[in-house]
Amino acid sequence: MTDATPRFEQATAPTGRAVRLLGDWTAGQFAHPRLAGELRRGLPRARGEAWDLREASQLDHVGAQLLWDHWGQRWPEQLEASPAQRAILERVSRFTARRPRPSRPNLWTLFLAFGASLLRAMGHMRGFVRLIGLLTLDLLELARAPHRGPWRDFSGHLYRIGATALPITALVGGLIGVVLAYLTAQQLRQFGADAYIVDILGIALVRELGPMLGAILIAGRSGSAITAQIGVMRVTDELDAMRVMGISHTYRLVMPRAMALAIAMPLIAAWTTVAGLIGGMVAADLSLGISPIFFLKALPGAVSLPNLILGLSKSVVFGILIALIGCHFGLRVQPNTQSLGQGTTASVVTAITVVILVDALFAILFSQVGM
Image (tube, rainbow, N blue to C red; front, side):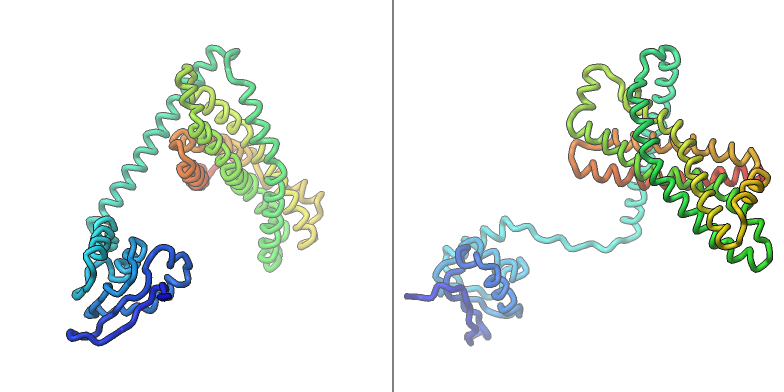
């Protein structure tokens, strides 16, 4: 009984070294993955080798594909094969796509990539401005006929976005207050300025950290949820069904979320600020011996009313921007799961980036307010 195991042997030919194939080079023999790997590693890779396939009992397309890939998808210089074997190899070579060589990036390709990125950014900006215009028209329509407004959707979003976010925002705000108090206490103790920790914590949390931390948490928590909800409606063709029934996407989907976030964000910012002040007050008592009573009495003098108004006003802007960004990317989702994941990720990253940029803009424009 002949041995059907696919193997090879090297022999001396009149023109040099030759590789002679033996056994069955078929799919049945290569069902064991280890055998195919051992053959790939053992076959010689010298380009001048002569190949003799005539003594192989059988050769099918799987064996021919293995040889063709081993040859680098090029015909060897010397090949001895039967007509049937050569026909199989020619068929494999015809239907196997060559691997394109990775092109090195040059100045022109970088310029084209930059132009494509710029066009995509302009497309997003145009869609975002269009969404703002449609939201404005929908708000005017709501003002003319408030009894027809989607108030049930608004109340549901207000609860899911606002009330359910209170535990995580309180935890993060409290921990930030503790960290900030301990870090500033180390520096203030060196100069005997322990009492100024109230001013530092008050200004930092009320004016900057409270609103921005709350907005970042909501952007990651609720902004992604908004994009995912609307994106799933795209995947399941609910958005197309709404368009067929004449229901406006912005009126029923965008406007309730924007209104809910515009109202919830100032409350979440105030809640996060209070939690941060409580954490900072406890840390100041433990690290500097400043009593909570002194902290509470000195806080109104350290933080003026314009700082509180500025912090809450920023939160309203943050909330509207997060809602619009989430809805924008949700409406642009294509009806497939890959686009849904990409849209959700882009929504979170864009919302957090925009929140930080707008906060920096507020800090520059209102640098003299309340100081």
